[in-house]
Amino acid sequence: MKDRIAILTYDVPHRKTQDLLMMLGAYGFGSMDLLVTKFAERPPFQPLLSHRPIAFAKFSPNFMINQRINIPDDYDYDFSPYTYILIGGAGIIPEKVVQKNRIINSHPGWLPNVRGLDALKWALWKNEPIGVTTYFIGAEADTGVLIKRELTLIRETDTFYSLARRHYELEIQMLIESIGDEPAGASLGKRYNKDCEIPYHSIVHKRMPPSKEIHLEALLQERIRNADPFH
Image: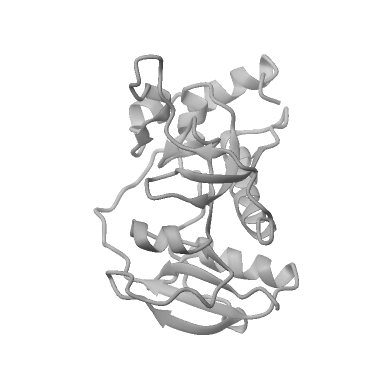
């Protein structure tokens, strides 16, 4: 029986979902369902350094879409027809849904070291590995069962922006290539220290403030000069 794949996304045009659909087409996948959830409006945020494409694109590649299905706020929906559900964009997914379905996320950070938002920026700031993690999601943010981790290539000529673009493209590529992969068996839980406390490097990060962002280009160039120890 052929795998049936769906994409979980927002009810507004969404850049990552658009890019994911286009790349799925390039990989030879047929049209699929969009499972659409309501986007929760947030206060506008303008980073000092934009490390991802504009989030809300003006169109979606309709030739890759079989049907759009509106998912209730409480996620009271039968997801069982789908072998895999790829996350294009989503808020908190109820634990009852996570436990019963194979929902895959591609996180732009090396889990469990770099959790939450602005993962690339925090990886530079904290001198953590710069990479992407695919995993079957767990009940808490950026936890679950590991599928694969891969480091993002860093070139001697990179700027923050060129690295950010390659990092984003790896995120999309790995999400697609995770289809059909079996989990590596490792659990991506929180990291704890010897006192069973969550150390700083495993908290769920929020947006990076401009006071830190302003140093990121210099931190990247320092890594390049010193030959990044993770590569």
